[in-house]
Length: 329
Image: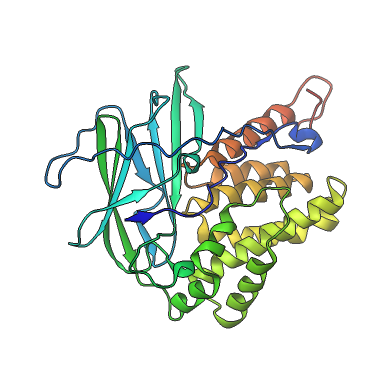
């Protein structure tokens, strides 16, 4: 049995960005109460076709490097209060294995559509396993071995099977990821805007960036360090730093975002990058960053889209105000 042991991907607190004109970050706590694990539904027997009427499931990518996490996004017109949910995984021609995922690791969100209806979304990150055959639990990455994976998801009566190709990483990429370890690597995606960076993770990333540059692990480490530096600067300077403080951080975040833009982590990096540009009063850059976001599977994508809407609303020309300058709401 595989057990997803990472911390929930931002399920403990959902954030929203408001009053972009004044560049005041507001983190609104909408934490869901922890519940018992959802029942692990019995998936259809192997060989039986999927039955999918109302459920839409997708991965943030269909190809990843070895050791990388992926994000499963589910959307439907409505999810039942008590989910009958099951997930299985297999590699190549191997057997199906159940993947146990805590209920708290499935953050939910609502997305309004152009027609006025609401689409309900939920998802989770897959990173590590508790496979009994793995001796080193700290390095029990779920996708450490290249191959063709199948991930089967069942919600209520609907089920669907997703395909994922895991390809070999760069030379020494395995060593780089093992320096961090799956449990510690999970913290990259678990810290909040007001969280202090994890010293052990920063130390591990320093080793990876020094000894294994150019690896996929180094790309994630570079991004983590960039977000940690931005959070430290914001904690110290708040909105008063301006270009003098935040321009360098914008450049660092932009460089970190580029190689991860096609992944779900690119959504969170887009949020940090857009906000940093806003602190530099580069509102055109904020909108461009929002438009450049390439995936929309995590709750962070909704926050990025909301930020774009706020910037547009507050920078629209109004009588008596020059075009392109923010006006009071």
